[in-house]
Length: 396
Image 1 (cartoon, one colour):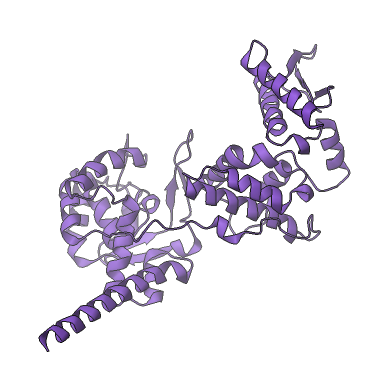
Image 2 (cartoon, rainbow, N blue to C red):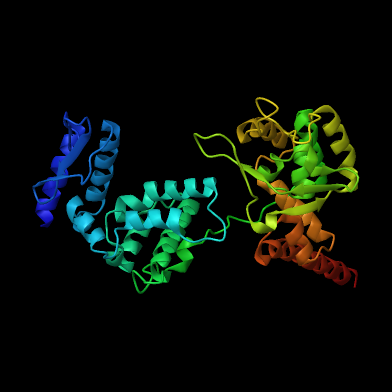
């Protein structure tokens, strides 16, 4: 079987590189398209359905080719896959993954950006290997082999792909009628992103340089991120009615996300805890007054920060076009926009804010996120104590 498989793969590869593409297309009398290809058994296998357009048929062929070449030993002809599905046996992974994305019960629906990221990881890393394999035939050994083949130079993407695969397989275990008895993803650490190092927050002097080097209509955005701790999507969806100058508060109840190829999508904040009211530090209230007067429309729903027109949220690319030179002027090319939020949380922790205070102010749904900043401040205090001791010893 091994030599024959290699022969078929070489032959299919030669066709892809030569004049003939993988598979065949035929337009029927009905106007619909039929797609088929020669499988590893030497027979022609057709899709179990016809397609409205030739492009749809080509997509099906492309996916079949990827399944066939990625894992020849697990290849199953299309008709047999359909029969397995109809027999209510364990589904093939691609069907189960789709059910996980669109059909898994969740407290809140997946955000469009999260779904887009899941589909990217599936298409790029997971489906080419496991897409056509029945989930009860995915073994720990095959997963370990797949994980080791992922690009080591992209550790974050690698960890996210493994974590997604583990979640999808756990969904098969947790269903009322379990499809598999045990999750074959048995290396928990493989799905963890290892931090490259402690984030260096911005100093007050650096913040001021960044603000001074931003255009006037965007300076308040930097202040909101650094002093109020809002996420970028929350900041870009702020409207006049969300600012209560009398009480000096910001109401955070929406966030904007962007998925490639689509218009801005307005939805809830990242988590339930993201719905919150944040107090504005008094020293930046003048900046709010100036911004509302000069750069925000009079309507209640007028955006604080707008893009091509006053009705569209500012795009991240536009924000970064100004932010990157501003941070470089401050000597902080390493300071991501999200690090301004880290700066806010760290400064709040340094004031002695409690864990509950940090969680509320920054919209954290778990204590672990806010504990990072308390631990950081504690380590700074320990360093200070050590230096005080060194001074005392030196004076003795």
